[in-house]
Image (cartoon, rainbow, N blue to C red; front, side):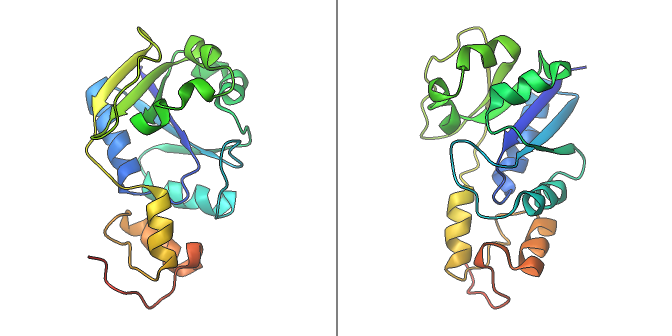
Length: 184
């Protein structure tokens, strides 16, 4: 059984995240993917509480296992879960560009293989020859862009799964208001 791990803040989860997991399952032959919501990422701020992001991720990935991770760094998560060693750790090409700045990147590569979504406009640096598998993804959505659109009063239902949109609107997350301008 081939396992994939997809970690992140999911602040909020969006169609790009869902497309990445779907493409990885097909292209890399993954039988199972565990979506790992990082409670407090060590490399960036988050805008919604961990439990809210966990609920949003569960709404976005109803067919996958979704767990909350209290480790701020990937290597610490992997050390805490030896049953995940040998898995394919999924990430976008934009994240791969900064991979060498991660805590103990060589240890991460010893424990897992990287499954990298090749996106238009992002060159793939030769970070881990022999420890990287790539697959195509053509989904330009970003969580940062969605938060900005929400704070500007825009409707982002076109960019997130319906269940995620319903939860964002219901909970008023990211400055969401019940009255939106239509996005272009």
